[in-house]
Image 1: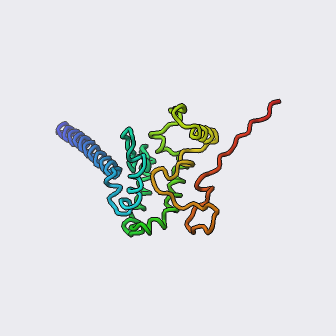
Image 2: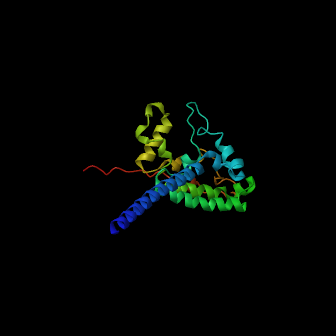
Image 3: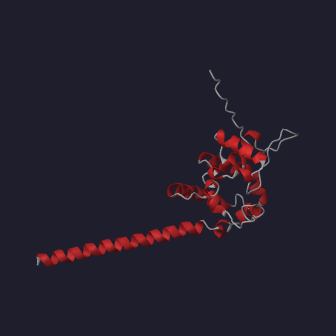
Length: 210
């Protein structure tokens, strides 16, 4: 009698473990599918704020169409690949979805009014992570300096030696820039300062030899 009860319990526990494993795999598959679905370009431009503003700008850049046919979609630049940073970015994006629902940037006029704030927020994020998403495709170690122009080589070497990162110089590579105060005439109230747009390169001085 006790033996039969033990076997029933053992079968029940085994069935529970198998069921939990199957449900866990299914939930993980659904979760991962949802993540990948929200990384698709079609999802990113499903709201008018993106489709009518930044997406149109992006279509006129080398990241959209180029001679080698390699396209960087929205998630390649704005969503980390590592799991934890990706989850943090997804949580941050929930606030952006809320603003889309509210219609905060649903017209070009509204979007351009907020462009300086949105741009600087993204620049700070990329600066803080050392332009991590840029480095998914671009790696300074793989630069072929012989194929770059003289000015590009000079600026890359200056930036790398001073600890700068991609976004310090390559703002506006895929989207229209907000107005930058050039110190000429009356500056736009929404204009960003030149120091924000292009941080100065720190010149390293060599210690004098004894």
